[in-house]
Amino acid sequence: MAEEVLVALGSNLGDRAGHLLGAVAALSRLEGFELGALSPVYETEPVGPAGQPPYLNAVLAGRSALPPEALLAALLEIERRHGRTRGRRWGPRTLDLDLLDHGGLVLERPGLTLPHPRLHERPFVLVPLVDVAPRWRHPRLGRTAAELLRGLDRSGVRPRRYA
Image (cartoon, rainbow, N blue to C red; front, side):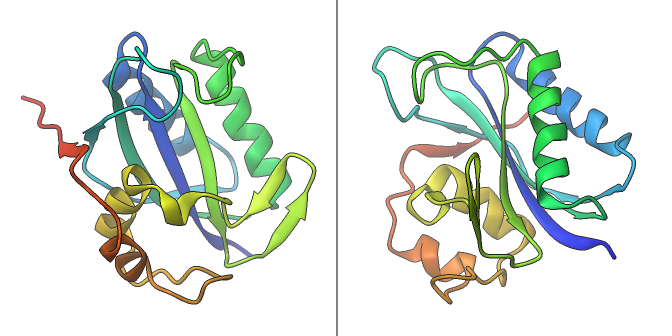
């Protein structure tokens, strides 16, 4: 049975928009995964070490017949194919794909926590999440994405338009 899933996409190195589009294309070809809505792309200030270029961020809603661990493994492989290397925590990256939610599952395992443990603190995730799933309810906190966003500073999240 396919579950509703939410995936955050981010990039702040190289062809940022190309990395996001490449990830969406790769997910569209993933067996057991069905694309849903894709949010607009936002340019955001980086979180983490100083001196990083700005990010492009978006959120994708879809359906997955894959269990959470298998979907996460697929996301990590897509990152790797886009040149992602893991160095400093919250450092710059060509592509970052975060599994935010998988059918409302609450899960804590090594390498996988659902829902994503910091999504409720991050306007660069919540702004595009509200675009695709404003009524999505955080399984631990019981608040909708729109409610979670209300208390956060959105000043570092700007819509990015492409010709």
